[in-house]
Each structure stands twice: as C-alpha cells, then as structure tokens.
Image (cartoon, rainbow, N blue to C red; front, top):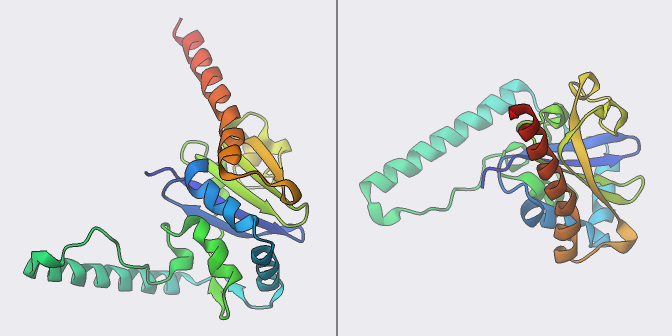
Length: 217
C-alpha cells in the first residue's frame, strides 16, 4: 500500500540516514521491520561500525542518480519487451533496483544494506520530507545515542520544539506528531509495538474529525 514513510538513524548528534519510502509505512509494515532490526544487538553493532567507517556512506551526485534511474528504465523496458514477446514470462515481482540504497522501494531495508555493507553505500538523506505533513505519514527514528526507537505520525502544531525543529519546513510550522518511544533494553514484541505505536494515532484521527466537524458546523 502506498503509505509514505521516513526511516531515520541518529548517531553522535546527527542524522546519517533519512530514507524515503513509498510503501507500507504503517507500524504493521515498515515499523515491524525496523523493530526486528533493532531487536538484534548484532545489527546495531554492525550499524555503528558502518557509520563510524570513513567513506562507508556517501552522497551521490545528480549525475549518478540520473544514470542509475536511466539504467533502471532501460532494464524495465527490456522486461516489458520480453513479456510482450512471450506472455508466459509475465511476473508480478519487480526486479531488484539498480541501486537499492537510493530507491523508494527499499524503505526499512536500508538498515540491513548499511549494516552489512563492505563497500561504500550511496545515501540520499530526505530529512526535508519530515516536514511534509500531508505525505509523510509515518516516521521511525533509531536513536543510537539514547538507545531508543521513536515513532512519529500525523501533525503536531508547534513542532519547532520537537527533535525535528531544525529541519527545513518544520521550523516554520507543523511537523510530525510523537507517537511512542521504546528503549532498546525493553523492546516489545511486534504485536505490542503495533498496538502502542498506533494507539495515539487513533486518538489523533478522532481529534481531527472533531475539528473538521466544528469547522463545518
């Protein structure tokens, strides 16, 4: 489902990853993927090593992004051509992205891509997307400094006072609403995580409906 999301990793006072994702942003989707990653201490250790390794993450140039996008279009065109020639080759599975770490389909899988990397990984930090309260429906922050997993969704008025206050756009108005925080030392199972992360969202939706009713009355 097209539920846009942002996966963030905060370490040593800065965001090293702010991965835009196009699909399954709900706690039952990308949320439990993030939770599963954080529940394994080995993953967190490898992630820290990757972030501490000079040059392991790098910002790709516009030329590189354009090249990867072009290669993907050419690859897709070839797939469609073969399908047209032989319908028995039809498959609903999309081929793996040419450069997964900068692709919108990767979402929370970026965590394993970085943690397991042995070569430089291109990263596009979409921190500005956190201020897009219309399209950024869920955000998950792995804070390696405080050893917490935080969940955000919806709209918070006066968000300039939140952890995202310095992000472009947030400082000028609204930002994502805080949903829940989980200590690495006491992480819930998936069911408990989804329930806690989603509970406040339901209340927020009710408040939004009430405000809409007041406007229409």
